[in-house]
Length: 356
Ligand code: KG4
Ligand code: ZN
Picture 1: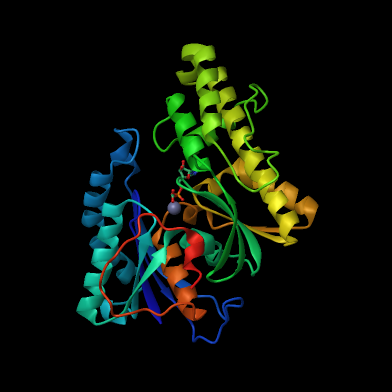
Picture 2: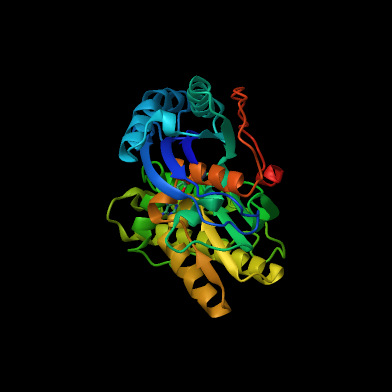
């Protein structure tokens, strides 16, 4: 079966085609993993950079411009035609309502014209299952650390569609903490990758920044206070914080990254200990962070835990993870694709509510 996946929840238009082998799997044990045939991506980062953040209306309009050419590109690369598509999957939520409506509208229109069924996918389930596209795919059960621009969650994952929330951020997400701190340092949107690059030249112990909720005894996170601490520190340090090439700027970036990474790392290890599980899956844009990966690799090796990541280029939003999640849900018998073209979207949608 071939599944076309369309991602349009925020500022990336992603399209991909995956192929599933014959089914016979269960929710906890996929038989043969679906195979990625082709994927294509357009990032709107440059367009939003001028505004310092995502402008929802511009995002929606750009998805409209990109989605069909990307679909044509993917089908060409996979040497397939639209008639070869058996199911059209799309990101149903969470995300920007207008942006989601573009993907769901196009998916439903394509599927209706072809007489094929559609399947709406949870964006975070896409991230969560994206490591199954890597050369070293995980096995269930595992603890998942989901760290994106909008979410920071620790989940216990027992199979496809079997997700139990262990803890999550009570305010800002980890990606947001990176992006907002970066903005204060004059690093262009989205600041996470830029701040991480700058941090490589700085001293992570230069400035003492808070590690919020580190000892809270649960698996919740809070990053809003850290952002305020970075702001206060920036005021103290003056204009050097914004100066390219300044030591102070690199040190502040390194100290900020160290604070975020330490909290993510310690809470992930605590969740592993609490659940008794010996596998960790890291997913979402912040999962591309090298300091986080190095810290987790070292801690997991010490604790006898196997850690899995998506391929670097599939850490941030993409269509492959949406097609993959749809394929795995269908394979596991968790959901059926339907000829119901209502293109309803869910801008707010908790991940553990997809356990059906
Ligand atoms: O998963 P994602 O592409 O989008 C959402 O679903 O939100 O995550 C984007 C987030 C942004 O906050 C971005 O700054 C952050 O991931 N990010 C990083 C890195 N690469 C992306 N943060 C820290 N270090 C990185 N290398
Ligand atoms: Zn995402």
